[in-house]
Image (cartoon, rainbow, N blue to C red; front, side):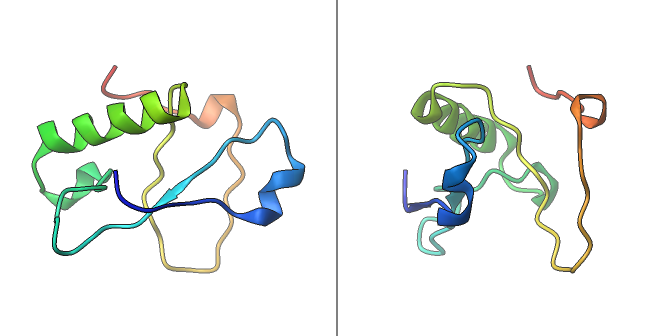
Length: 83
């Protein structure tokens, strides 16, 4: 697993566990978690499983959007896939 980041601003929310991964262009699939890119699905699912082991929990992966809109999601808005 390559670099993993955490946001200090979230540290006050003890119930919120989060990480942000960074892709290494030299190791194209090293931390790729995105299934919408057309990359190797099996490798991406393996990467997600590695993150789940690291976090010791099931994870939610969001598609990265470059914009200024904010979406609030509750349990009814979560769609479980690939389980």
